[in-house]
Length: 601
Image (cartoon, rainbow, N blue to C red; front, top):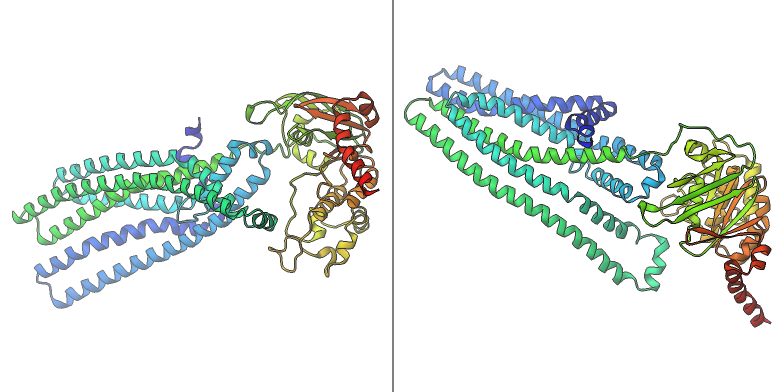
C-alpha cells in the first residue's frame, strides 16, 4: 500500500506541484539546466574533432579562424546558459526549502492529532522530517530536484554518447553497459543499507538537539551551576556524539566499499575500450579526428555511467527523504472542521462512560472511568504522581481519545465533534504551557483582533499582575521572552502562572481547566487565587488539579484517582468522614502546617 502511495511518480508529482506553486520561474530554469548541460557536453567533445579535421583538411587560415570563433562562441553561450540556470535554480531551491517546505512542517506540527504527535511514531516522523529540511540544497529533501536534474542529464547524455559509440563497434557499448549494471547493483545495495540507518540517525539527532537546545536556556542555567551538571552534560553529549559518529562511520564504510569496487570496474572497462580504439586507429579504420571524438565520448560515457550509478543511489536517497516527508504530512490531523458543532451557551454537563486509555497500547493509564459532572460544577482532581490526573484532563479536552468508552458534553459524543469546537469550548492552564515572544497583552488575548480593555484590566487585577505590569516602561505592551524580543522582559515562575491564568480566564469558555495553576506562586498569591476561584469559574464547568489538598475545599466535589481508577469521590467533608486515602493524604499534608504553626508559637 505504502509503495503505491509513495511511488517515485507520486513523489515527483508532489514535489513538482509544490515547487511550481512556490516559484514557476525557478522551476523553468531548473528544467532549462538539462539541455544547457547536454549542449555544453556535446560542444566540449566535438571541439577536438573539428580542430583536428580542419588541420588535416588543410583549410584556409580564415576558415580555420571562423571555426574557432564559432566554437568559442558556442562554448561561451552554453556555459553562460548553464551558469545562469544553475544559480537561479539553487537560489530558488534554497528559498523553497526554507520557506515553503518549512511552512508545511510547521503547519503540520500545529494541526497534527495531539495523541499521534506525542506518540513514538509522531516523534520519530517529525524528527526525521525536520532533519531533512536542515540541509537545504546540500543534503536532505532539498536535493531532490538537483539530483533529478543530474540523473536526467546523465541518462540523456548516456543515450547520445551511446549512439556515437555504437558506430565504433556494438561490443564496445555492450561492455560499457555490463559494467554499468554491476556498478548500479552495488550502489543501490549500499543505499538500501543506508536507508535502514535513518531511524537510528533520527534518534541520535534528537539526543544531540536536546543537549544543544535544552541545556542553554535561562531555566536550566542555575541548575547547571548549583548542581555541577557541566561534567554530566558533557559526558552525555559525548555519548550522543559517539552514537552519531558510529552511524556516520557505518555510512562511510558503505560508501568506501562502493567507491573501491566501482573504481576497479571503471579501470577494467576503460582499459578494454581504449585498447579497441587504438587498434582501430592503427589499422586506419577511423580518422585521428574520429579517434579524438570517440575517446572523448568513451570518457564522457564513462562519466555519465558513473554519474548514473552514483546518481541513482543519491536520487533514491532524496526520493526516500520525500517519502518520509510525505508520510509525516499524511499523519492524522485533529478533526479540525468536520463533525458536529458544539454550541455551548452555558456551562455544560460532562459525562465519561467506561473510559479507558493507554499510551502506545501499553499498560492502561486510566481504566473504566465513570463520571458525571453537572453543569457549572467545580471538580477537584487529586492523586499521587502518575495516577492519571493530567491524562484524564487531556481526554476531556479532546487532545487524547479513549481506547474504550465514550465522553459526552451536554449529551454530544466528543468523538463526533470537530476539534475547533473543542478549542472554542475550553479554556485551560496546563503544567507545561509556554509564553510567546510577543507583548503581554497579546499573550493574554491571543487571537482576538480587538481586546476588551475593561475585561482585560479586570482580569489582570484578579490574577495579581497589575503591579508588575504597571512597573514596566511599556506596560502591557512590553514583549516577553527577553533573549528573543527587543526591550523585552522575563517573568518569574509565579508571574508566568498568573499570566497563563489570565489567558484562560480572558478566553471565557464554558469549560475551565486548571492543572496545577498555583504550583510556582508564593503562598499569598496562591491564597488570592483560591479566594477568587468562585469568581474565575463563575458560570463554568471547571476542573482543578492540585497536589495541595487544602486547595480543593472550595470545589463542589473531589475526585481521587489512584492506579488509573476513581478511588474516592465526594465533598471534602464526606471524604474526611470516610477516613480513606483522601483523609490520610490530607492529614499528612496538614500535619506539616500544624507543626509549623506550633514552632512559630
